Amino acid sequence: MILVFAERSDDELFRQALAFANGLGDDVRAVGIDDSGGYSPDGCGAALARLVSEREPRAVLAPGTDRGNEVLAHVAAMLDLPMAANCTAATPGDPFTLTRVRWGGSLLEEARLHGSPALLTVAPHAVAAADAGVEVEMIPEAEGARVRVSERVETVTAGVSLADADVVVSGGRGVGSAEGFAVIEELAALLGAAVGCSRAVTSAGWRPHTDQVGQTGTKISPSLYIACGISGATQHMAGCKGAKKLMAINPDNEASIFASADYAVIGDLHEVVPAISAEIRKTRGAG
Amino acid sequence: MNVLVCVKRVPLTGGKIVLTDDERAISTRHLGFTVSPHEECGAEEAVRLIEQHGGASTVLTLGPPEAEEQLRDMMALGIDRAVHLVTDDSNEWDPQATATAIVEAIEAQPEPPDLILFGNESADAGNYQVAIRVAHKLGLPVVTGIKGIEVQDDGRVRLEQEMPGGRDVYELPMPAVVTVKEGLNLPRYPSVPGRLRAKRKPVDGTTPTRVGGPQSKLEMVRLVLPPGSGKQTEVLGSGADAAPAVVNVLSELGLV
Image (spheres, rainbow over the protein chains, first blue to last red):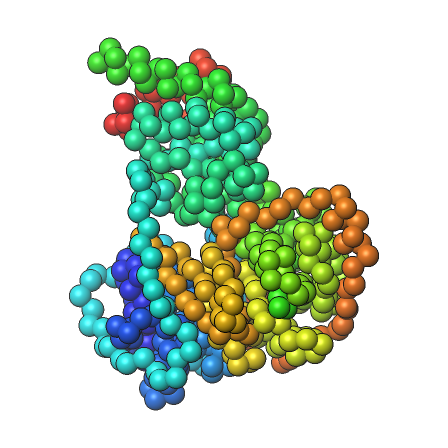
């Protein structure tokens, strides 16, 4: 038997974990934990750990979400078992052999997991999601939880959210200053796009961290990503590899971002970006 | 109060990762080193908490002798002292062995920390579990992915976690273990006097015992570079003259 923790903060990623489990060739059961009293990471972990002792599954899987990784790590700590986070492939056996994500997806690791049951989380977008409609068995949280969400503060975001935007225009170190982002904002406004930036920009204090696209920022998957003055460090590419089309504007024709780009413009963004905005206005004015 | 922050030495990878010949590590011959971004915010937060509430801050790492460079970097931000668990084997330590060694070091501290900070996950291995294992071994509560920390007068700590559409709040009694994410604060740039002071601050170096021996239960076999994007790049032009070609592409995508 393979247990899949039904962590439902992202239904798509849960169904991807189910599909991953289905590929392991065993009876798959989805288990959710009743958190109507407020989410408790250790309460969920203890409930799953107890279920592992009762049912002796071959593996326990969770989606590679923040909470999926968190709860499974609690299970691993409670049972003193190894755990492999963010796997893209696995073959059952003793040990399990698997491939997992490092560096936010810029590198893969082939590994062996010496422990039973095998505890794995499934990397986002490693496999296509299973169809909806699976039966999820709900179990109560374990007693004695010490940590629980006590309050939810809703945040209101104005305009297009970076994570959900269909078009994102980002600036990097090449923008040069906080004020320099005026040209990025202008182009973004013309395209109805969200504004993003690289880690160099947030570290310099030019933009808030909420604008950062990257391994330690927001991971985006727009139809079009326009990267202006961004060299293409792995830290940044880990955040934008989900983009369907990438347009890069950079003065250095050796910049590594061009290796991932669908469209390239060689040049200083402070010349290129205003020219694009002017051309859009001209085209729309004529249309 | 006493705040302890754990950091990990990782290479500054730049744009392209190159592996060593044995495919078990990143070739770092031409690379500098840093700590994971989340952890730098953890160190900054430790410094701010001590500035605000008084007490002492400690930075801890498990890593090769060269990781002293990262301990000095964190002390240049204002951390008071360092603990270095010096490793000498090239086999990477797995999360269980790492957590056990960290717990032993924390239990050996002259004054137990009130708050133990980790990054949410390391930039390189991304195992998402060392802090949780440490918390269980120490019998302490743990919360992950925190972007707001407020120590209250009653000895409790209020923690905020970013979730889609809002923030979840936790309130814990201290001592506690907390993992943080970048965006918690904007780390300061170390000053020249800060760097000079860091050179004189104490580093307590010890050799940790690796539980389970050199065989990791999560055993790396080899590293693999993911397949390239295989994209054909269309060059639209140079400088401002490229604008009409760019707008053509935007029109084809239905944006203009």
